[in-house]
Image (cartoon, rainbow, N blue to C red; front, side, top):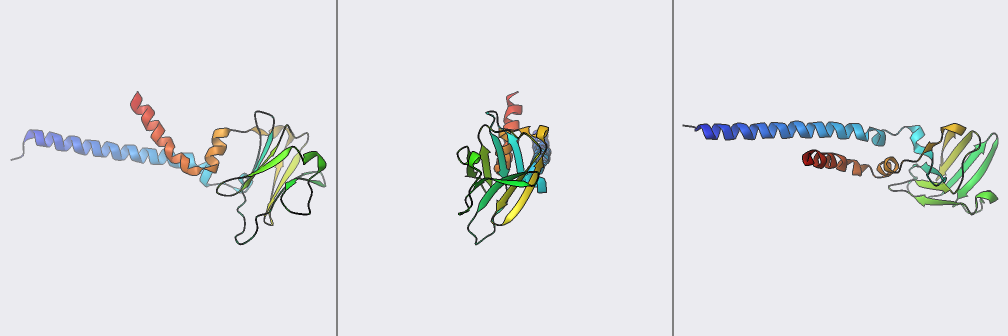
Length: 177
């Protein structure tokens, strides 16, 4: 004969399991929604342009290099019909003199490059061009449409696995209250 205490204990365990399952399902759903911008990058998000707080202009180029090639990059911009080289690692090509000492490029993980132009703001509609190992992408930027850089979103874009930590942080905060 089953005791009433055993039935209550069994019911509590089932209730706990169901609540845990529902909670996990909810967090997986939230995580999926949070990762949509990271996982579903469209053509335009291959190149992003933003203005940093210190007035530096940042251009991220998330082109994946071709395998078995030396990874060359070239950043340029076009105003009207003239293309201006900003920074490159291709030998024999020199950047425009005004960009030789105020730009730098860093490599992004898992792939891509970030151009930083120090103390620079665009003064007219500009097309930014990024070339990585003979693959080229462009982004047209209107004068008043440059967004401020968001350190958190750019960081999460570069390291999408960190989005897995978001639900854990939310759970910790939830349990604290």
